[in-house]
Image 1 (tube, rainbow, N blue to C red):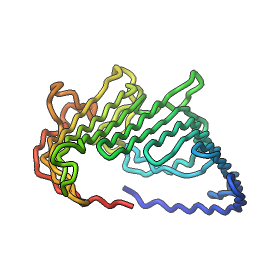
Image 2 (cartoon, rainbow, N blue to C red; image 1 turned 120 degrees about the horizontal axis):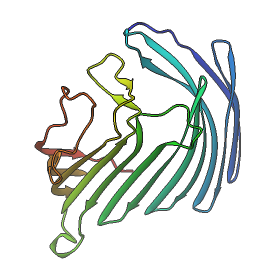
Image 3 (cartoon, helix red, strand yellow; image 1 turned 180 degrees about the vertical axis):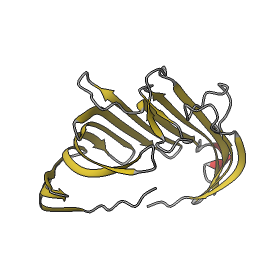
Length: 251
């Protein structure tokens, strides 16, 4: 890769009062001045946010040259949050150079004494005016930990649990991911849309702030459905079984 010089300067002013906050500012890149800002409003457990951001992304080209692509993102976010349930929906519109794309993202969390569920979903390439197709049309990531607080474990220092983690990706077919090429993300014209589905499982014990488990990476309940590249010569995700000890940091 070649060395790339980059400098972005952003400055803003923020006003905050009770249940709302307003931020306004400017980002500078080369000779461009781009307005940025946000508006955040909260009512009880609900919140609303409107944001405009400016940033850059590095793209590696075929000749190993690194291209700097500045882009701006407008987002509208609705959310809800309490002690055990969290949810958020984000609509966004991104624009860089002469192209743009629209999408939506969402996430939800349920945290109970015996159940932890986290779900994240993203949908890209929305709208007929989309002039910047993304490699991924849609993704979904789910993580579930079930630990019944009953029987002899109700007052014990440890609890058994079972966990499932799944990742689903729907590739657009308009752009492909090829880790064996310099550009990595390449334009495609003849590849049909394809999907990738990965499932991990684990079971073990929760002991204070530690999680001790035996974990299956790429649990083959649905066969070989994990496709992480359009290149048949690249290595796919291999099944792995291992003992895992995680120190969990809690607030």
